[in-house]
Length: 298
Image (cartoon, rainbow, N blue to C red; front, side, top):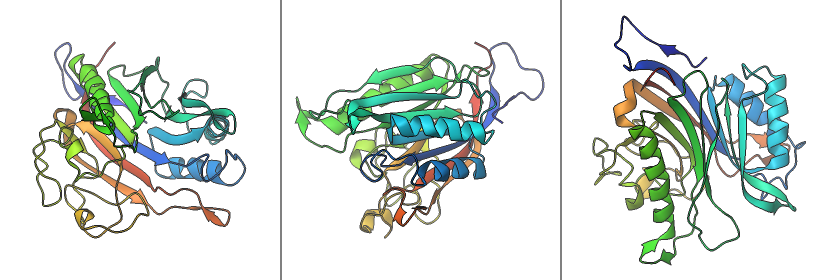
C-alpha cells in the first residue's frame, strides 16, 4: 500500500514520507502483438505487477484493447484497492493499432485523481507523443507520470526534436515540483543514461565513468546499480556497448527529484518473459522502490 507516514508532530504543510514501488514496461503492443489480448501479454503484465508488489505502473506502446484487458485482469487479481478508479490511458494515435487507438497508460494500486495530458512537440510523424500524469486521491501531492520520447533525432529550428521533448517533459515535472508535488516519472526515454541529452535530467551527484557532466536535479532509481554505477542495468536486447559497461542498452528509466528522495532507493530489470513461443517484448520490465517526501493534504 502507498501510505503517507508521519513520525512525530509536524507543522502544517510539512512533509511526511511515502514508500513507493514503480513498475514500467514498453510492451510493443502492436509491433510484436498486433493488438492481441490473448497471446499471453496481459497475463504476464498482471503476474509481474502483483508479484513485484508494484504500487504504480506505466505501460508504453499499448493498444487500447490491451489496456482494457489489463484493467480487467488487474481488477480480477484484486490488485487495485478501488477497482473503479485506478487506470488512465492516453492515445498517441487513434488508428495505429489496426485502425484503433495506440498509446500509453498508468495504473495505481490506490485511487487516482484527475489526469494531466500533455502533447509534446511533433517529430513529424503521425504519432503525437504525450506526457500522462495523475495524482493519488489520498496523497494529492504525490503524482505519477509516464512518457515515451521520440526515437527520432532530426533538427527542429536549431534543436534536436528528442531534446525538445525531453525538455518539455522536464519543465512540466519541474512545474509540478514547484507547486509542491513529489513526482515520479517512468517510461521509455529513448536515451541512455550516458547520453548528453540527459545531462539536464541527472543530478551532478551522479558523476561516474559512464555518466558525468550532469547539471539536472533528478536521480534515476537504477543509477546506484553496482554493475554499472551511474547507468544501471540494461532494459533492451540491443548490442552490448562500452558506455553501458558491456551490457545491452538502457533506455527505460524511472526518475524522481533528488530533493524528494529520503534514504536509499534501488531498481532492477527483469528478463523478458515469453508470450507463447515468442518474447513478449523487445524491452525488459524496469521496477524500483524509493522512499520520498510528500507534502500532506490537498
